[in-house]
Amino acid sequence: MQALYNQVVEEVSKVLDHAIAGNTASLVTLGQDGRSAYNAHSNREYLGMVNQLLLGQVAKENGFVQNGWITYRQAVELGGYVMPGEKHTKIYFRKYNYYDKDGKRHSEEAVKGFSRSEKRALKLRRARILRFYQVFNLVQTAGLPDRLFVHDSPKALNPAEKFIAVENMITEKGVTMQLHSSATGYDPVSDTVLLNEQEHDPGAILRAVAAWTGHETRLHRPEVEGNSDAYHLERLLEEMAAEMLAVQLGFELPMSQSKSQLMQWKFCLKERPETLFILSNQAQRVVDFVTEKATSKESDSKEKVSL
Image (cartoon, rainbow, N blue to C red; front, side, top):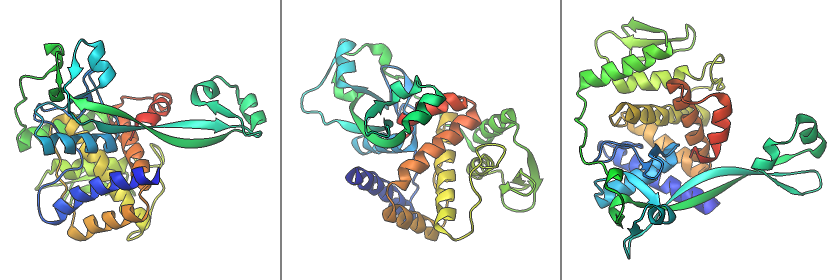
C-alpha cells in the first residue's frame, strides 16, 4: 500500500513542480471534451481528487480527445473491445474490512446489517484497504456505441461567466458574503466569506467557500495554527475542493499559491504520502456539501470510491 501512496504523490508532485516553475497548472482538469474524468458506462464522474488527477494527467499526456473511461468488461458488455496493445490506467477506491474480538473478518456489507448492540458485542475493529480498477480511455476502444462519445466541446467560459457561475452556486447554498477592502477569503470570526470590492476572483471565492465548510456547524474541521503542517494541509484541502468545484461549473482553476506554499505542500506529502488520500476524501465531502449532492448517509456509502 505504501508503494501506491508514493506513486500517487509522485504524480501530484509533478503538477506542483510545474506550478513552482511558474507554469499554469491544475490538480483537477477538464478533458478536451469539456468534462472531468467520468465512467462512460454509467456516465458518472469519478469521485475524489486522486482519480481525477491520475486520469486527467494521462488524458493530457496522451492527447486523448475524450475524457470518458471504461473497464475491459464494460467495453465488451457494450459490444465493443479494447484495441490490442493499449495500456490501462489504474483508478483506486477505498473500502473497509471489519474484525471482531476473535479476529474473524466481516465484510463492510455484512456490518451494515448489524444492530448497534451486535457491533458492541463483537467489538469490531475497522481496517482500511485500497483496491483498484483498470480502465481505458474511449479512444483506446473500438466498436462502442456512438452515444458514448462527446462530439461537441462546450464553449470556454469567460471571466464574467465564471464569476456568475460561482456566485449562483454559493448563493443557492446560502453562504454569507460581504464586500470588503481586503483580499477575498473566509473570516471564521464572523463566519463570512469576504469579497474584495475591486477584484472578484472565482478561484479565491471557491477556496474561501471551501474554508467556510469547515465551520463547526457544517463539516466541523478542527482549527489549525498558522505555519504548521496541519495549516498547510488544510490549505491544500481547500485547493483540492475549489478545483473540483470549478470543473463542475465548467472551468479549470489553476493554482495561484506562492512558490513557498507549493513547496510546503510537496514536503508535507512526501513526509506522509497517505495524507493525500485522506485529503482527497475530505475534499469530496466539501464538494458534496456545497453542491448538496449527498446526505451524510450517502457520503458514508461513497467513501470507498472518494479518492
